[in-house]
Every structure is written in C-alpha cells, then in structure tokens.
Image (cartoon, rainbow, N blue to C red):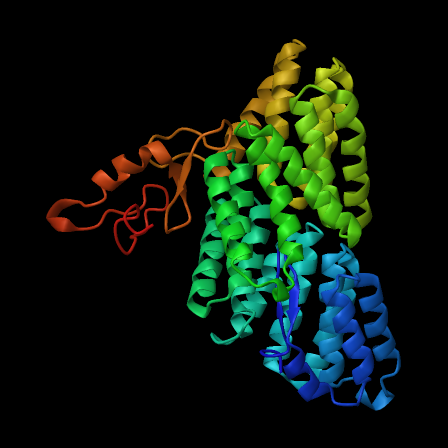
Length: 451
C-alpha cells in the first residue's frame, strides 16, 4: 500500500498522484467522484478546491472505515496539498492520522510514508531535529524499492541543511540524486539539483549554484507539458534570481523573480510568494534602494510568520537589519540582528547564527564596544569549526565571500582552487589511498576524480 499510493516529494517539492493505482484501492467506498474532482483540481493547481473535495470525501467515510487504507491515501493527498500551499501545521495533523491507521493495520510501508509526511511538515516548520528523526524512521522502514526512499533522503538532506550540517546535507542530497538517476525519476532529479543549488547559493558559490539550477531547468524543460510541473518552474525561477543578480545578470534576476511571483499568486503558493518577496527585497537592497526593499522584507516576514517558516523569518530579519544599516540606524540594526540571532539559535541553524554574530561583531566594533565585538568574534570562530566550514586543504573559512567550492563524495567541501592539490596528494606510498583531510575516513577512490 504505502509503496504505490503516490510519490511524495519533500523539501521544496510536491506530489504527483498515480490515479490508476489509487482507483484500484478506492473503488466506490469513499466517493470515487469526489476523489476524481480533487485530483482534477489539484492538477489545475486549484488547491483550495482540491482540499475541499478530499475533506468532503473524508466526511462521507463510514465509521467502519476509520482505519481503512483508503482513508490513509486521502490523508496523504491532503498532506501534499497543504505542503504546496504552506499550511504546514495541517500536514502534521493528517500525518498523525496516517500513523494511527498504519499502526492499526500493522503496515510498515504505510508507516514509512506517514513518517515521511511528518518529516517534511516539521522540516518546513524549521523543526529540523524532529525532521531528521522522522526521516531516519522512514528510511529505516522503507524497502530499497520504495518510491519515496529517494525523497526521504532528500528531505533528510534539507533538514541537515537547516541545521547547517553541510556534510550530511550534501551526502543525502547526493544519494537522492543517485537514486533519481537509477530509477529515472525526473522529478526527484529536478528537486535534488534544486536543493544543491540552494546550498551553494547560501555558501555564496554562485557559479556552482547556477550549474545545479540550470541542470534542474534542463531536466524540467525536457518533460512533456502533461507532466504538471508548473510548481517546479516557479520554484526554480525564484531560486535563480539571487545567483543571477550576484553574477551581474540583473535583468535576468528581475525577470525570473517576476515570473515566479505571477505563477505563485495565481495558485496561492504562499511559500514561493514569500521567497519572491524576500528575493525582490534583497535585489533592491543590493541596489541601495531601501524604500523598495523594506516593505518587501516586511511582507515576506509576514507570510513566513503566517505559514510557520521560522528559517524564512530569520532570513527576512537579517535582510531588514542590512537595509537598516544602509539607512544609518545602527541601534535598530542591532535589535533586528539580535532577533534574527535568537531565531537562528532556537531552530539550530548554526550558519544563520554565525552570519548574525559576524554582523553584530562588526557593528559593536564600529560602535567602540570592544568587549561585545570580541564575544561575537569568538562565537563566529567556534561556529565555523562546528560546521566544518574550513577547507580541509588550505584551512581557510568557506561561505563568507563569493568563491567556488568543490563537494567531495564524503560530503565535505573544499575550495575549487584547492582541488588539484588534493588530487595530487590523494595517493600515498605504495599506491594506498589517503583519506579526506577533513573526515579522515578512507574514500573509495580519488575524491576529485570520482566526481
């Protein structure tokens, strides 16, 4: 049951229904017509109407079918619709219902699917530790042939990204990408590449970010129009805007963001709307146009608060603080950075905490408060070490300035410029393989040549 009912996509992702399998199970029991309407509305991205149809199906379910496999599937459909529209708290509610049914029927595949829905709901609510636990539960239960195994690894990678565990993040995203290629799952391929693009954008490696986003777009454009992939299009468009702008492609950046926002507004995609507004604000701030940046930061923050995305709230607050500095209000900037710091610490996002600490150290230093500046400088060094954001070859910090990075098979990152040095010294005496300089664990071959 759990293996074949639908393909659930985590992280910044969606669900693709397999109606034929679904109908074989649903029959006339819980309202086949209602399900058909719900599926039709979903494909047309009329999410509110789709959710209403599925809720009506549940209302018409007989009490004797409370723990039925059919009801489990409908709960799964609702989880996906609420994921697409940013109603993440509702995902947890219906995933809990799925857990009850799975336990009642003692169905391990159902349980794996339910844990996965709990994981992706928690990941979007920035409850990253919980998301990691639920992903691991899902992966442990899943069979190797399960259609959601690759998505579970992707969700796990996204959760580790939220915790700034870049090594485990890259390992799991890379594993999901390998599964996508093995199973020829184009949707998973698109989403895994998009996740890598987001990682490298965050670490300010805009060239590598563009590489992954454009790979995702190439895969997307190679699919037929009947595949219902508009969600991916708007996600990728807004993700491309920041690296475009950072690489000097300002017109492309604005056009991508505008297109994504139009699509998101049409189908009430609140998460992408928030990301578009935040990206517009960033672009205007980088142009030193604070009058346009500030209201967009505030709108993005409002939507992130509405949907419960605390990571997004943190990013919006950091942007507001940067914009406030341009306006010359140091005190307000300190307050905004402190709020962002509190949020980043509460969700366990070490990279955000480090970024806020760097900014606070600089502000206090400029204000002449040496003691506070030293405190935050010390915290910055500690956080960089905890995240393993030091290149294992040259020892310099990564992620603070725009530069190309290189992912190793073990999940660690090094500077792209350091790659030739690592390749040169990978093989030791008598042809033995040297380990990655960061993890000291033997790799299966030359880490550079394997990429």
